[in-house]
Amino acid sequence: MAQVSSKCFCSVPLCSNSKQKQPYLSFHSFPAEEELRKKWVIAIRRVRGRIFKILRNSTHVCSAHFEPQDIYVTPKGKTWLKKGAIPRRFSFSRCCLRQGDH
Ligand SMILES: [Zn+2]
Image 1 (cartoon, protein in one colour):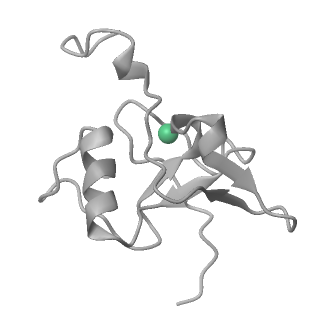
Image 2 (spheres, rainbow, N blue to C red; image 1 turned 180 degrees about the horizontal axis):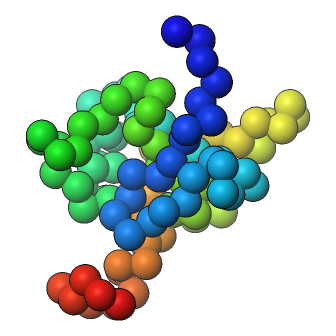
């Protein structure tokens, strides 16, 4: 079960970033703490249910949705989120979301 997550992709609506296409991005799995996790779900405007489930190691949010100051790189080159960081950069926060075409 120790497969490398090459199939990392972003679960944010309208975002199609994936590790394969955007290897320069980092992909962050949902936080373990329930409270913070809820904030993430609200932030990305998803509703947990039949369509959207948070699965450990396979539900990710890419680093494009985090403020640069919320991300830090360890001396070993790993990208981590600061404690309590919440995704807040979305294409849908800039325009009206109701029309799905553009
Ligand atoms: Zn994304």
